[in-house]
Image (cartoon, rainbow, N blue to C red; front, top):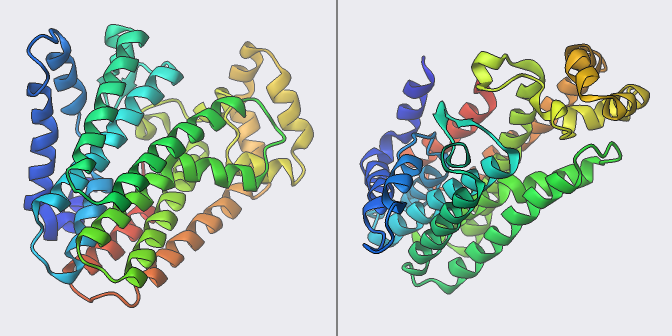
Amino acid sequence: MSDVSIQNLIYKPISENLDIVIREIINESEQVPKNASGIGDRLQHILSVPGKRIRPAITLLCAGLWENKIDKLVLKMAIAVELLHIATLVHDDTVDKADTRRGHATASNLWGRNIAVLLGDHIFATSAMYVCETGNIRLIKRFAETISELACGELDEILSTWQTNTTVDLYNKRIYNKTATLFSTAALGGAILGGASNEDVLNLREYGYNLGMAYQIYDDILDYTSTADKLGKPSGNDLLSGVITLPAIIAYENGCKELIDDYVKSSKFEQQTNIHQVISKIKNTGSVKIAKKIADEHILKTKKKLSNLPNNENLKSLKLLSDYIADRSY
């Protein structure tokens, strides 16, 4: 079954509402002030690039667990979550000097880094306006916290670049801020607006947390195990960029300290020449398997957090989403 077919199966209970969310996001490019010339076309390019839509899907699926009709407030939250995700991608691509995203030229590549940052800021602000329309103070506060945590995650990654003394605890903190915080907020928002009890809200927030942690760990593993064609970027790109992720952290603590220290101290030419050899030696320590086991444990926790929730199509989709994250090939 293709990746798209699997997503369609997962999103089946919410497909119509998810389409509404995506259409609203794309239409945002037409809502800019008329005196802001040139912004609309640029936003159209950014907002129309297709993604996996995982985060707004989580919000919609969690809200629909109690079989309440998805109302405008839930849709506003789902839009806010996806816009926030898109804004972080614009800024991340600018920081990373990435040329493409999902096969399309990035904003910074097309119009320069200054314009890209300001476009990202505009999308951030727009996402905040949508969450404010829910009128839920708890969610508005949590959304602000999420924006702060996302920024901290990106800063942590930048400041820890080429630092080989990164620990598993520091890595977990970084990927929570970078990825899992928004998964957690997406689930929390759906649960609150869907009318969940406080216990169920906390369970779904934990579902989102563990799903986000697993998502990022699997993503970091793929940099060691996948191909450039599947990744859409060179394999080993994290290590080439000095980003020390879980497989390297585990390997560093299990016999590869000297190898990794020497690698980060070497010249750019030597790093590019030796990258595949270094990756092979890291994999030979068993660190990738250990990292995968940690990600798998997060997936098991997502299933446990769903165990006492209403058993309907939305619950089945949330479980399928966990399986999809664990099995995704890119």
